[in-house]
Amino acid sequence: MGHLTNENRMKLARLSTATIATLLFKKGLRNQVIQNVIPLGKGKANMVGEAFTLRYIPAREDRNSIEVFKDPAHPQRVAVETCPENAVLVMDSRKDARAASAGSILVTRLMKRNTAGIITDGGFRDSQEISELQFPSYHQRPSAPTNLTLHEAIALNEPISCGDVAVFPEDVLVGDEDGVIVIPKNLVQEVVNVGTEMTLFENFVMEQVTKGKSIKGLYPLTDEKIKQDFELWKKG
Image 1 (spheres, rainbow, N blue to C red):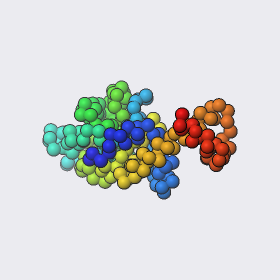
Image 2: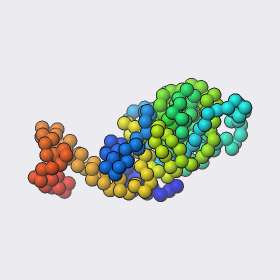
Image 3: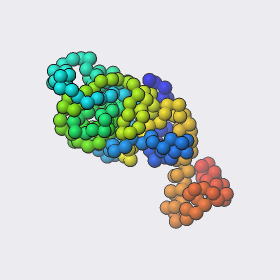
Image 4: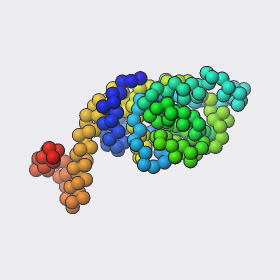
């Protein structure tokens, strides 16, 4: 962990998942948006952090009594206590929200440990309480039953699937109100550089469209005169 610089973290926080998705599509990466997850609560800061992963498998009755939570080495508890500062806890819950991946106590603990956010392709219990925290959290839908009824936390910080997307430790996740996207760690710097320029251009386009300008030649940018206008606009 720790390959994501503070400068790049701040720049990624200003990029939308839509912009990043378009940029990655141009690189040939079509399946980086985690499917069927939504943010809990509105108006929170964008989520940016390196992935720290937890994988669940189907629960088996002889292994998953309520007593397992007394074990300090239980993987779910270890994940909450060891997820690095500024990292995102990403959980592979097999896209199954019939039992909760975590609840408000564990999510609050992650927030107090200064992690960057949490995401599951399953569900959270105490979803209303989690939505009120100033902490980026994403799930499929609310779920009251304890995870032990359906899931067993089995492995930490290894490659997982979350919402049909491959997530490797130290990949970078960006989340906003549209959803969450996974950036391969080897592409982070390029995404920052190109995405920052793309965002500037999109701001320019929105300003022009708001003033009543046609998108012809503007979006996509094919008009040489408009290209010149954009370069002047960037200079202020």
